[in-house]
Length: 102
Image (cartoon, rainbow, N blue to C red; front, side):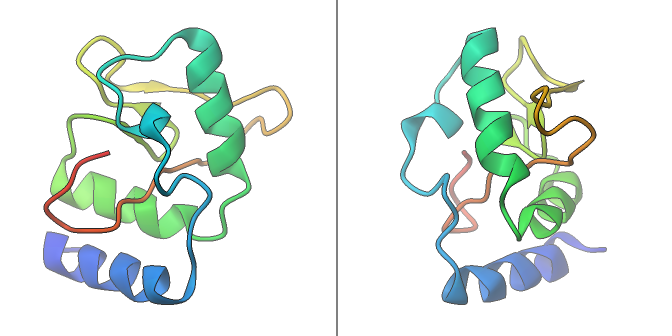
């Protein structure tokens, strides 16, 4: 899937749904503690558009923020994080504009 296609799908979903991560600094912070990553995971684990976020994060190769169950900040990049209550869930953190990075 191309970045543009993934963005179009995510953006269309965001027109009808405001994800619980929207506006939360925790998802765009430069770094997060383990507890904060767990908090992000719980929030993302309940999001109905997490798969669309995951597809966009992969297609656009985001390298910052908390996306698709992964803290993509340089220290935590590539480490999947799920909470004990949402084990196995793919969690994500959507953005509201293509140019922004969570």
